[in-house]
Image (cartoon, rainbow, N blue to C red; front, side, top):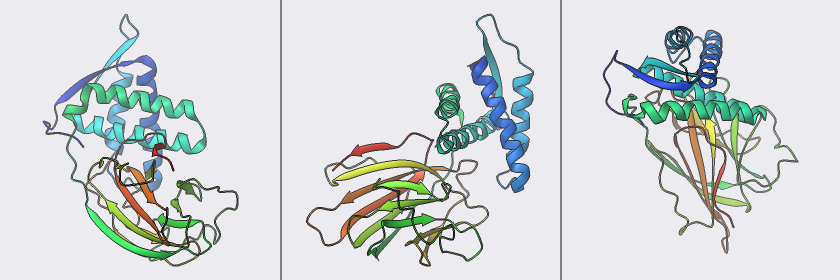
Length: 278
């Protein structure tokens, strides 16, 4: 994600007035949010610079604005727009999500080659899970130090349905649905998107989820109502980006235990994607 760039060099991007206004709004919301969290990603000053740059520009005769920011500032805004789009999706506000995605894509189309590079993470874990009567298993991050149990509710909501991947408890965690009493799961975190492999899997689904190594870096695998297992600590090397794609590939036919491959990598916010259905 990103390329070599020159620190301090400014890169102009042409935006519609509505795109510039939306970026200004997202930058302001990011400043307010970071004031509550203590700004662990050090993005507040960059967001303030974005606000100043946008508010100092005027529309041209075509109703467009040329906004010049450093590569680091554009990188922070791409991350903020991804977060804003994901939050709007969670709230059921598709128009707001689309506004963030359109503004983000306009910036990427013109500045992607100048964004800073980020070192990704690579780790793998394998587990056999006795799911029994639970609808599936969970990926979560602790809300308190050393607390690896889903504390929002000991039971998964009864009306959840059977979506292969979904987020629950105010989108704090991911539930991977299981159709068998046992699951053999391989979990991978990767630096970039792998190609889907429909020839090897019966079903493949992807969603976007925010994961962050702040305030607690652990990524935990758990069953509903049970203490979980720490898989690994998430890296800060991808900051300011905190949105990941999560892909579940499943084989279930003629097996006592389902086979799952659960992969995640840092990427831009996008709607849920079904690569293959059973």
